[in-house]
Length: 208
Image: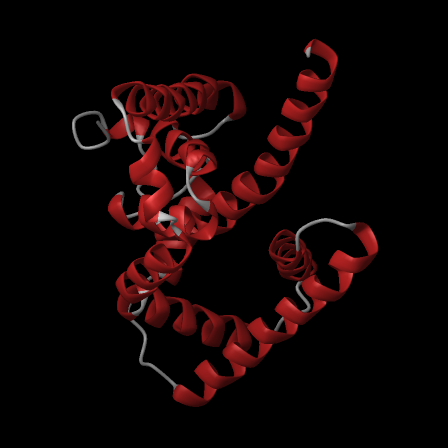
């Protein structure tokens, strides 16, 4: 759909902003790989991961979400040197280009209970799963215009909420060639998943 109607797709950008898109395109130009900067970027990523894990014990919000929020705050506060940002981006490009398929296959085989899936597999099960994915994708697609977002990217991020955690995010984003949306997908999966479970539990307790 994004190919047939380019106005609906941000080509990897979620928010409609011509200025941000031009900056993003400028930053995506080919740059030589500096392994020292890549190591520094990896160290910074690990530091943010540790900060997210420590804050999780205090505020009881998933660590990956807190890690993303901390990185966004530091980015907007401009406390991260440009060289460190370039190193972190180099790490991201390496992981997204070389490790996506091994991670997706390995984690999928490790965490997906194949015996349970085969045991409950039926036409009704497929219909329910398909209905959930379609409903989520349509919700994101239809609401995107009111939130100043691109409908295609919004539908992809929203559909990540129906996947199997981080493994599902990697599978959906890699299939749609939108790995740059991983931070948004993580927030949709972590916070959206937790809120859905809490809401469903409350509804069951009230209606049961």
